[in-house]
Image (cartoon, rainbow, N blue to C red; front, top):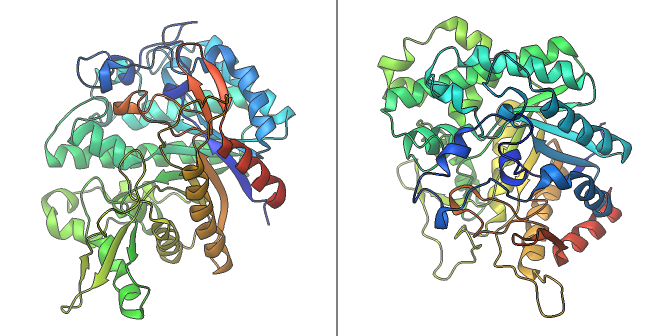
Length: 441
């Protein structure tokens, strides 16, 4: 059995900065964050946590934390400034230095190829709405594989397709900020899945021992009370969603070779015309499913053999994002997806935004985050005891960072960042997690 991965996670645009240095091209987030009123107080990721210049000392903090795996993403435009064609060697050198330092420290790299920062030049060509996107992404994957050789044993193709398409092409709240028609969003989602499959094939062709998968998110339905009837209706809740925010819209085609039945019923004019060869390609075997989870959604069985969502209690516990503290959601989501697909699971993100600051004693006290992590990790441990094959857990996030549309207003990190000075201050939760890992690794 492979050793359990205890780690933490980040994403390139959220921490790297150096948005226009050493040959890097622009990403959709570089452009989107410069548009007035798109981001909280018009923040942007031009500097972020300045990880590009501070990665060596930051990796020392990873070593101090004691994790055995670190999940991070590659900035596509940093290595391919135009998205395709000419390679930026300085960008590849940067990531190779990170990989070498991690491997020297016995920290396993867990690399995400796409964590939302598409090269802007490809966006001008239509991005996910262009059927050529899968070829662009496969070319990018092959550049990475050639550069990294066999330094990386774990790859995730895409992070949270639900947010890429739903928030980027539906609600317009994330880059590139579009609000396109439903069939266009579904086309974008389909192109994403084809891109995932071509990338997965390239990775397996390079080295069949590399573990590859996709990272999902979405509504984590859980039984308000764990009665047999409430548990039995959980599949109905998960199958009730068929738009681009659905979990099953992306995972069923990969693991079952077809879209959810609800898709064919609700939008037959689109799904009945899907090329069967596309579905065969999309169902290319992968090794695991990554799950990002922060809150849940309580449901109960109703009298019509269906389900209904339960209103949370007044004054329910919530994080600084306004998300409910519902650790049962992580357990039941993992259980449902494992029973549906029988594939190993990694909890690739879990954590909380907290209203943190440096206290007068020079420390950052965040007992809420410690309690939150204890709750959610406890559910991971319970799931494993119940036979769910979970092989890793990654706290989001290693450090405070640019939190997309929320800018720098929300702090998810185990390390506090003073954005004026870039001073790093490990929080109490950093030391709690360090101690927990020492006892469990």
